[in-house]
Image (cartoon, rainbow, N blue to C red; front, top):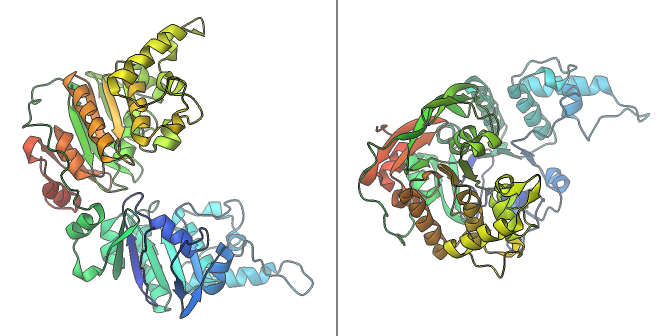
Length: 482
């Protein structure tokens, strides 16, 4: 965080917006005592505070409801309501009758009728969410922070939640509302604060901004350090490598379909939560769809696991390079060849000679800056780590590489090198599915771009029609283009 100013009025529903890494979580964790602040001041209810624990934040009236509800499913509703602050009688025994009555009163005040003596698991996500809210306000909260509260709710349940939020507002309880769903922001919030790269990008009344302006503020207009690498669209007649039809997966993917042609760079554009990564994981076999079909080289396929996809000559450079990509304590050589090992082994014995030859070839061809093959990958820069991950799949001679945010967290020079590699792969007939939050990056590199929003395909652009303003309009829910 870099000197962010943030203010919420009493009884206000205030949206906190920003892409991944914008600083939303950091700001909330400082406010709730999880992270210590390194500078600045926090004022709450007219007094300066400096919470060092979640309990201290709760004591002054700040409660948080996280996306992953911190409740105990096998315990009763009332036990969850008073978890960690159970009511006891004068003899020290649990006063269950009083807890039941108070729990019923709290939920009734929120408009929820439920048998509070039943296990929490007997109820759906919406009721569990209400229990979490009831628990938050029952500690005399003056500010309730809701982190992606609608991510697991259907449309009807979202309206129940919004009714509860309006009731909190009537009680003069302020709400910080974090969500990637723009329609919800404009329906329930009065003010919006936008963060970008740990800095304040803007704070404005919801009435004074539209969805397109909000997206532009969240994403930012990147200076054009690089020019578009493609001219026109020349792959109309190219053969289709893979096709996904009517893919449905819970509330995340809603009947979406795409096709990727041989040698094509297909981009997926959309805000966080639009379903881009979820769609890619279905294609790679990392998750399974509820319904829909996948075709690979003209044949209907079911990728039950990533191993199936790898066997079909597909690779996946994950978004979270440090957590899901590299194995930090292993060497560059081990990280690069981990997927290749079955091909360079005989009777379970790895051919060290072949391994060294492959790694040496890709270190040279990709310009990976490392003292030697045995260097632990964690000591390399982000750009060089990403090159190692690219090499991991390139040495498998893939037909398709999925790249989820391939240039996130690397400097401009390394970004240019990664983008050049993407074009080289494309020119060699390797297809690329590229997910990026930077529209300018998609504009520079893609033959076609599919725009997604809330698990749906909003439209498709190709060649010189791929422009930042057009993509942002489609993300904001404008007219779809095919």
